[in-house]
Length: 486
Image (cartoon, rainbow, N blue to C red; front, side, top):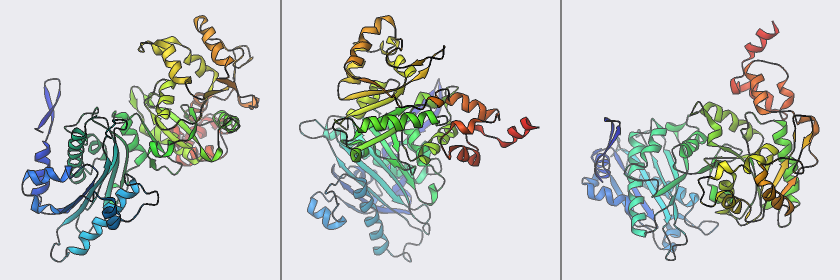
């Protein structure tokens, strides 16, 4: 791969070194020294360093433990018996890192910055049903006497040829090692550099985690947001502890109940909808509570402010949802059917969507489906083709009436289509809702917080107002309230 030049108009804004130049720069740095352990696709990354020249200054050892028994003998046996897992990758990185420390004397190599690079992948199968995926990571030092840092990513191959996937993996590995040493002080840029000489049609990066002294101030949830923002993946997830999690692992064969919202901030209505719809969902046939996952989803368009993503605002929302013990998903899916399609990649079990009346009315608006050759019928085929139900939360109408699935109004052309789904039980009302909170709206709460108006605390779930005040989230300023009081 030759040097790439990025242009803005006619102006050169950045020159990207070739893959060979990156490998050579690493090789010529006399202090970078480590091991390569690659399982599943050949020694694709280390090959670039061998070919670049000067590799004896960088490569302490290169190995590929292809045979499972050999691999188990070196790295141990996984509890689940699988090899392409984050756990396996971490064992590889730790084992190889410890080995280099044991076998190379610090007295002899006082200035060496040791590293261990590893990948464990499954490339496309012969039937071409599964395109393949893998874990890739590096454990490394920036100073000889400093503790180790780690960067771990999960990838999904998009190419349908083994050889092409191998080449893609090799380039990605060089980009990761180069970025780890020369771009570590700017993790957001490091993320973008992972795609140097690669295209997003070649692979998807859907999980990334930074750790270690150099990344002590990095919030991995923000790094997840960058993956979606940069178009590297369609969706990312993190658990109540704020840790990035692999969507495929957590969604696999699960019953899924999803909520879409701005959650800016999360209100009593959001939590009432969650509690009541979950109760109904768990009463459905074939829904086992132990195998059910609840997801609070925020779309990328919901995070934009004046065309830009407000990262502080995103973190405020994430912090509150995590404090309530929720699993959060950030996606670039505008339409609901794309959310269901995404989940269907990982599970064939029952799914549910909880939403308000206004959201359901929007779903029956044809303008959102003009880009589809089959229009709204194609979208609805994807939305309702499996055991999927909408749990509908009511709203108060302009005249004070309660609007439910029985009296909501869709476009006249959509009436019969709506009746079809309602008659077939695809839309069910949440009936045991709390009528006292129907007039609570996130935007009103946010406006009150921003302008220092009192009374918003009672509109939020228990403990949320205290978190907002303590961390001054969503623009909360205690001085505003004082000024109003005075």
